[in-house]
Length: 451
Image (tube, rainbow, N blue to C red; front, top):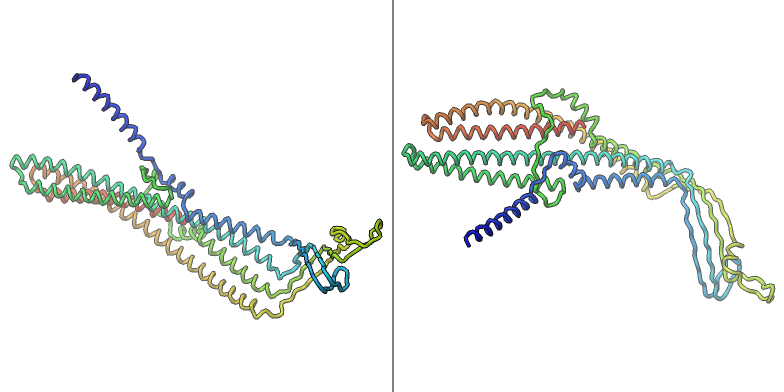
């Protein structure tokens, strides 16, 4: 009976182990690189998608302005029923009674000259389309900067978790050793409690790092708009990163940034579009010359003809009248604006002010770009200097830690001296990872400015 129970228990445990292995495989973290997160954000990021829609909208507006050069064709028709005294335009007589008339016609209009208003409108639409494309490119750059920052922050938080766990494991091992030494009488109970207190503090720090990591992952997922799935295993960038390599001169970096910057190009295109808007406002003061063609006809119930068979008068059918009364008109019309309450004058003044504001926006954009590039350049230099300092500090703190560890284990120094060296070592390790992530991010930002 016992053997049977043992076999059944083993089978159940085996089935449970299989289920656990399947569940673990189902919940395995998906590997995610920086480039993959950028690709996902390019597809799903809301701000970038809106910029693309605005660019498409500007292209549609440009096509609309191109087709505005085609003539306009409009069909009209009316049907009138009069009861009483009226003048029949079709028959040319005054009639009393019930009269029904209809006047269908088609009007085609071709604007020959409008002060080049359509030309300026098409130029403005093209310039606005260019500005929208540059704005879309800038939105992608901004998105890449945000995603990269979120990604590197998550990497840093994850590394802080790893360091904290290693530190906890080390302190727990030291606590066990201290308990043995305390039982042997070489250390006091207070030393054991001090270590346990340090372990509890480090576990609290670990919880803080874990919360920071979850927050960073949530912000990264929100930038990618990837849904609620946060089960990613981030892969650190594998691109070669020579932190000690000298940077190009600031002047050359600035020159490339000014030539490449989509934001600056968008502002420049906006200035050109605003200047075209001023030309449009001025063209409203010009005369308009149009060529019109009209094909129409008319119908009246008062138009009669004699029936050859019955010799009686009867109404001519609708379509027969339209065929008989058909008329074709060609006219050339000239419209000269004389007085419109100074509306065109005020529109020109507003357009001129808009142009001045657009030019100032361009200057402000260029100044902001210069400041941003200078700041990014200085950030990279600072990250390099910080990295070199941290590398040297880490080497010294590692040596100091190894020395303190040996002396502590041999009983030469007390626990607090050992713990201080351990704290310095962990702090230097965290600063190294932070400096590497910071350099990668700052360098990436500087590269984004240069294209």
